[in-house]
Image (cartoon, rainbow, N blue to C red):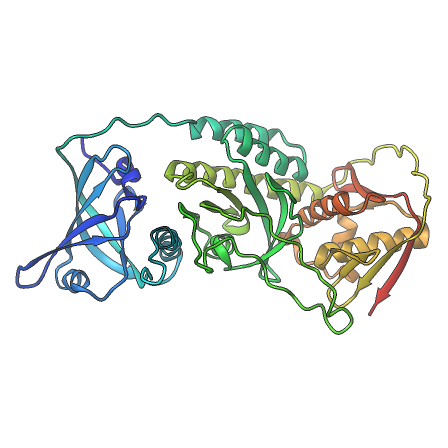
Length: 446
């Protein structure tokens, strides 16, 4: 049977360094260790280019290379005949290898030495299994295909965006055995991602943000490629980055608007998968674990497929909410309004909203909340539609691709966590109700 790279992917995790044999133009051989023999597809691998050494010199002079890789559990060995094609110094392949190398470097205490200069792409000409003793392979604790099937069925049965997110995160825990996960949506206009749902953390972190290109999450979104790290890394470029502070302007420069990004203090394994729909990046599915090497290639494949299903569902529910409105459910009657007035303060420069001097939300979601409470204060209005929000020029909403429905989910979850007297509930497709149980005092800071 002819072997393909797919059949030996476990050997390419980097847990056991590979050997690479090259030959100089005059026929002199050279053998050296290489940090990564990286899986690209069934016919290609990439080697990490870190130093201007003899191996590099030989490859440029003679493109034929032999690599020896070892299975990390069974110690089975495979010899690969390779042909050098090119070196990539940016883009998805380079970023995936750079992230993995950061994990290997931190794990081995070589963070100051392991710096990726480029990703050398090779065509695999042949794979030969090397005879020798082997250990028995350990059975997998879970079948990722069965887990993916269960997750796909749950997402397909969801009736709105909120339940889509709940279904995806529930299945990650129940079917995949992944305890720590979050979904972030992309705010393309601001170049940032915001957390819309999470599981397994002390605080949900809903509303926390991270810049596009920052950490494994930001790089996965920017490059639209999965980023996976199997060991704890102190590399600031690929660790679970906490977003930087953002000044609010002259009226609120000293007011804190930090919502901590949820995450493990010692995250040993990380996998960030872009959520892509229609060729457009719309967010990131991120999972992590305190265990080394928790996520392998099979997990990556399954979560890429899950993220694709999630992206399709997000777009479909967004379009459904925008395209038409169901009749509103009967109003059960307005809740009694009692107690001291809650001060809702809005900073127009950034649409930042504070409630009783505590930061609540900002940006698009902040602008939406301010419209809702103003309409309530001036006319006791409580019923709203997605469509009217989209058409309201005062909100300065981005185009339809920016996912208004996700903003409403974010706002509803943030209110549920921070304001027991303010609540948003869906009353039909494209419709929702603002529920208020305390008097409101509105302050607009312009």
